[in-house]
Amino acid sequence: MKRQMLLVWGLLCALILSSCGASATTPTQAPAATTAPAAPEAPAAPEATAAPAPTEAPAAQATTAPVATSGPVATSGGRLQTIKDRGHLLCGVNGGLPGFGNLEPDGSYTGFDVDICRVIAAAIFGDPQAVEFRPLSAQDRFTAVQTGQVDVLSRNTTYTISRDSSVGLDFGPTTFYDGQGLMVRKEVGATTLEDLDGATICVQSGTTTELNLTDQFRSRGISFQPVVFEEIDPTYQAYDEGRCDAVTSDRSQLIARRTVLSAPDDHVILDVTISKEPLGPAIAQGDSQLLDVVEWAVYATFQAEEFGINSQNLNEFLNSDNPDIRRFLGVEGELGAALGLPNDFTQKIITGVGNYAEIYNRHLGPDTPFNLDRGLNKQWTEGGLLYSPPFR
Image (tube, rainbow, N blue to C red; front, side, top):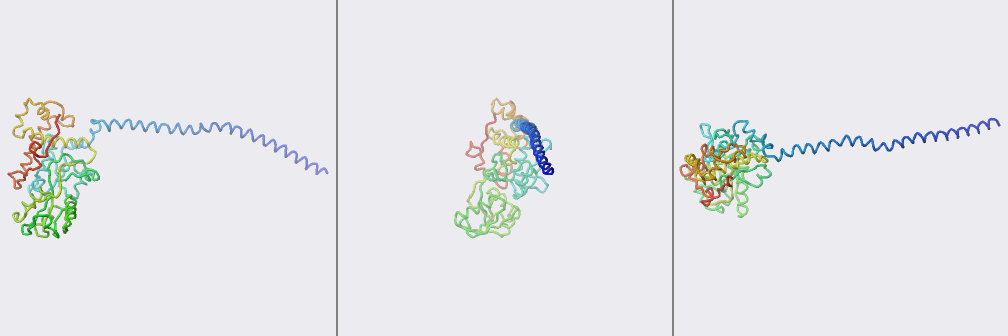
């Protein structure tokens, strides 16, 4: 009985202690509940820590934005400044196209496109010889621009939408308006494209001529067998050796290369033009200051011819009362400085290289083996396409 009573009392005590434990736990949880409101404060600390990041990001953007939009600041460390610091221009040219870009036996470069490089060098440095020429193939010319191996490409390169976009070039003014043609042996007797149905045609790869040829023959429902070469010399060598019936390229190139064939009089250029080929200098996309320099240096050769100013009579125009001529020659105004050039940069171009007519005639005109008619490359005032925006 006593043992039973003890068991009962033990059970009662356990119940009492259990009740006390529950109430003891409640106060313990209460502070946790009290701390619970502090829980939002705990995340507040990370928020306070993270807050500076958004604040700093806009600050960085605010600092960068003026540099991107401010001409003098953005361009001070650009390609033009690199060229100036280097002390000469790097210009990619053709080394095997007489009249346009040709490496001479003495190691010098001559040609129309070569002189466009000298025009740009004269504008920047006042010295047309401050340029290093780098001969480029049709295959590697774009890579050379994209990777910065050259500052400017002046290598009988056609301005097209794909080259202006996917290839990543920015083109300056068209310096030579051309069109694609075909050269054949007289013995073939061809006068039209249809006469070349089934013929073998030598063509250089990596050029617009390869694509144009395919399009033209396909649209006319005639066939041909292409004989493709990467370099210009093997292309014409194969044609000269009779390994193909015809060769195709820009008409100006055909005229130039015919002069160095083993028997030039045995070949004829068909009276057919199958494409538009506007040729001109190009730079890597995204450098507006250097593009401005290239554009206005070339335009200076156009405008000088339009004004009648050349390398022989320049001094006669320095005292002109014509405000347009005075601005053009940098006698008054700050047009050159706005480009990052000397104000008299046009004078340096004219005295060092000449106006457009002088450059053209020197390499392609009546006193050269090519005697190439200017055609569309005349001034706009004479029915051609050469037209300079105003220097004002």
